[in-house]
Length: 169
Image 1 (tube, helix red, strand yellow):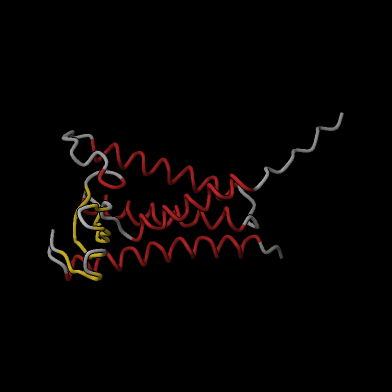
Image 2 (cartoon, one colour):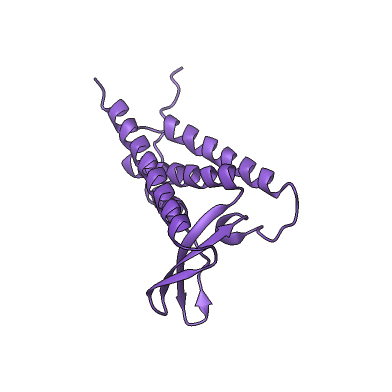
């Protein structure tokens, strides 16, 4: 028996773990931190801050007052999800770094999609800042997507594509 099915199960399990960890952490934040309140973790650098993001990554489009914003964001997210899923299934299961990156992206996308479908927004809670400079709040799903995209970029940048064999005449 080929190891490919076992590898696929491992990658989809990684995606499922990302979704589970994302949803559990968001649930804990919602249950314990009132909306727009913060708990300092490392004063002057890191806080747990409960916010709702109605836009895309880092609040992009959050101020857009269109009734189509939610539909548009969900459509884009679903399209990206399907494209990444197809890419993962069509790529060799043994391409570990590629498959891991795609699995992280899939897990993060599903975690945020669950929030969008349930609440119309995404729960963000990780806030890093130095003085008055602040990185936009994010969550576990966003972190997973970011790590997955960087891993994917690294793979695409450093690994030569497989050469195609010429068609025989």
